[in-house]
Image 1: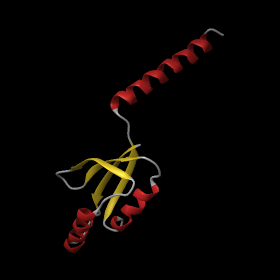
Image 2 (image 1 turned 90 degrees about the vertical axis):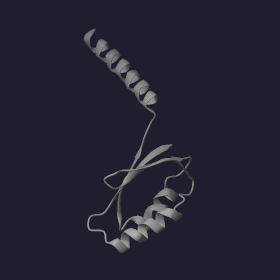
Image 3 (image 1 turned 90 degrees about the horizontal axis):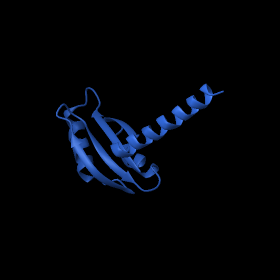
Length: 104
């Protein structure tokens, strides 16, 4: 399953803490996950797209050293074509329910 891992430095992070985070990040290799993309925001922070085959717990554990210095948001994501297909199927189902209710 594909996850977007959004991150931002905490406010008032010190220079020493930033250096520590950079050292951690350069050695970071999430277990049981494949990094698909990693983008850095010009304004700070960024987003990493990771593919996880099984349990998300090892990924969460690998982020724990960063928690005092970085705010995270982890969200499952879908390919746009898949998301649109799902939305279309749901719209068809809703229309069929509505049509059934109107025909009563």
